[in-house]
Amino acid sequence: MPKVALYNIQGETVGEIELKDEIFGIEPNRAVLYEMVLSQLANGRRGTADTKTRGEVQGSNRKPWRQKGTGRARAGHKRSPLWRKGGIVFGPHPRSYAYSLPRKMRRLAMKSALSAKVQDGNLIVLDQLQLARPRTKDMTEILQALKVDSKALIVTAENNENVEKSARNLPGVKPLPAARLNVYDLLAHDKLVITREAVARVEEVLA
Image 1 (tube, rainbow, N blue to C red):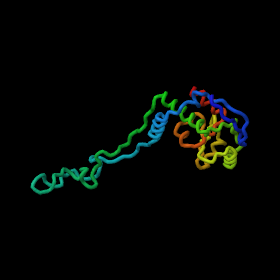
Image 2: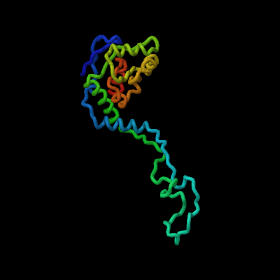
Image 3: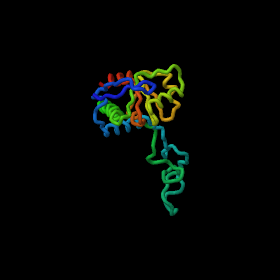
Image 4: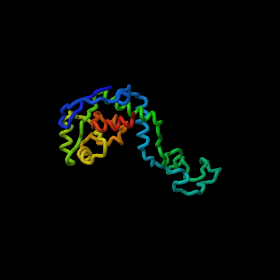
């Protein structure tokens, strides 16, 4: 089982914590990670792009000139895609881009992302993270004590309003409860700062 140091909010080492090997110690599957990120980005698309077909643009339905004898090309009406201000042939229309991956793939992607954080030394486990009041300066001091100077994902076991309000104004820092932990955010942030209670919650779900 991989072991990592356990820190307090002053940045001091207060012990070690053993992580489950089947969740935090596997070989990351890059192909599954790619598919999972692609799926999350697709599911986040609004899909509201729309273009007008020849039946929707403005214009007369009248034939511009007679079929033969003018020396000009045949034309049925002014809404043809060949004409200026005509309709669009194969343009986008509102639709859903969402699709889901098999459950086993989603779980493997999460385990791969968590294992990659451990292997790269970018996992920081806190014994607890409690703030008396929402204050951005307090969160800044905690991150400085933990030597986090890059993009960081802060994960707590439950929704913690004080932690969320203290961290959300910091550039590159995103607070999340364990229930909303996802592969895209894990890969988009360099450091993962997670509480011991949240680790237990993640292991319970993925075990």
